Image (cartoon, rainbow, N blue to C red; front, side, top):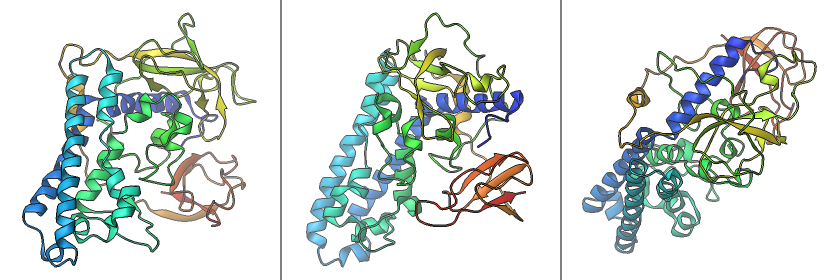
Length: 374
């Protein structure tokens, strides 16, 4: 993540363009429909395995009992898929997006795969789920979904894509919809800020941009219709937070980064939340101003720009790390992108002469070291 105190106007505009693009993409019909397709792939594999179970499933000592349970689980998964399909249909036929997103968000395969139900039923040691891609790595029912493969991984990715509760829950600070997906992503699941979109390179899903990135609208300098923290958002769309007083001391007061935070998506009727400053744990009361009103799908059509949402790119070559390293609190010796394996693989851009961020020891007790990428 770039340091907003040292970002150039060009870098700041690029960051706004990317955030604006992703907010529209992650809340789009096309993107959520891809989540539906991933869930459907899991269901297809599930029912095919019910019909023709592999030998490991047939020879399971509780095979008969497990078969009955799996049939009931399939029915529950199917009911959830119907709810998602109904929500997607609503998204293209109603002015009330909140109802559509809430219906979509009822799809939650994660509880039966990784929640209390899964623990009680021993899903992680069930040959049926192992054949579908469940990976049991550690004793004590410690399951790490990020390392799962095959159809189970598709469900995890779909759960990340189908994260509409992130934008429909008013009290986002106290709600973590990904608590069963990645225990290290608490900050990410709380707010649609610059940091939630760019903090981790692989979460919530790979960020792929078109060759031509549409421009984010200009800053909304009109304070007539702004909504203060705690107020009710009147319009679906992307809103930007304006600080009560410019932040970042000893910074050029003309810099917009000192006045405006990252755009966020709100639904009409939601409570205007506080804003979390990027790279910090503090929350600020702010004025929210409408940047873009969401009028998608009101006529039943899908915007042409959403075709870009389905494009993929070839895998990026692995990053090469130099021998240059530094520690939190050190003066940065070279301007560049620095990577810290013991900070959830975080990468930040630091200018030479600035202080390397973070704590010297992470929550797990590991020493943190920054390595320069080339």
